[in-house]
Length: 353
Ligand code: SF4
Ligand code: SF4
Image 1: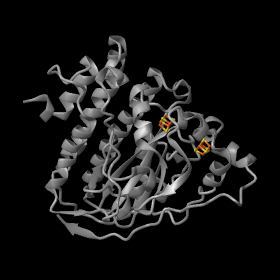
Image 2 (image 1 turned 30 degrees about the vertical axis):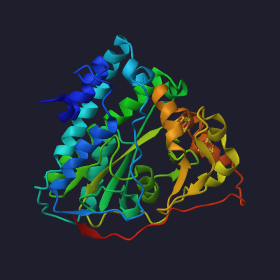
Image 3 (image 1 turned 90 degrees about the vertical axis):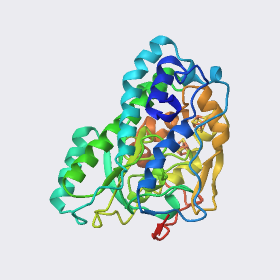
Image 4 (image 1 turned 60 degrees about the horizontal axis):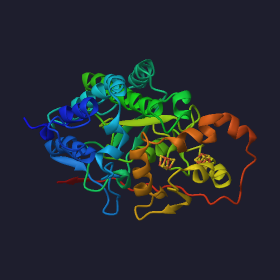
């Protein structure tokens, strides 16, 4: 089998050897994710995006391989990264293969006891916070789809010390650890849900077919800051997000989001805008055609990100990541002149392919 047909071999080979095992250039992350997305074709029906939904942001920079830090790691760095990267891609592939369109759920309604058990398992597995959302169609990326209209959204925390060194190998290693944990936990929780009779499809830890930050804000986990990332009470922006799409119709959905004041603070702070080494963060989020807000120039961010260990400077220097949400909130006296925005919710409908 050609490596290009096996996203798992391709990515692992890239981490070990700096190529795809066939002596070619760095494999395209976007192509790898597309291979995983093809499993969605196993479903007769999918919840589809609205016509104005945005496409998934491209990961590929198109830069020469020697300029991309992930492809030019030392042998020591590769060997350190492998125990994180291999389980990440193995678990992503496992999650994708679960989208086989064959599972017949026995139940659509969960008892409070089931939700309590699910959350207990999530926290034991290392989840920082978990909430629930009815996925709006404008959060589904253009050309994609999801098997069910409800989602569990969960976060895992990344440690402050390595992120404070960003951009660096240590910081990229911490980010890779976060991705791996999300992939492993997603599969673990989905297995438990399926055994209990519910449909459960973990989102891809990397990429995915919905806007995870958007879903997390709607679920009430936090609010999106001017750097375009989620800010939460626990860990500021030092987190990664994943989802599990499910048919559970009575999830305990959050009615109000008490974290939107965060953007009033952002309108005064703007530290990430000043510090971003690529000048990629807009002075103010721009309205987007799908009803959401565009916070960063992805092309500008991606090139710097690819050349500099998956830059995490904006999330690391954010005051919410540094001193914590509660400390910022305590000192913040409000900013009534701040331009506020709320991401609207689109209605759901299920469409045939
Ligand atoms: S650094 Fe400041 S402006 Fe940027 S996201 Fe954090 S709080 Fe908001
Ligand atoms: S990841 Fe780095 S380059 Fe991209 S927006 Fe954040 S600080 Fe800027």
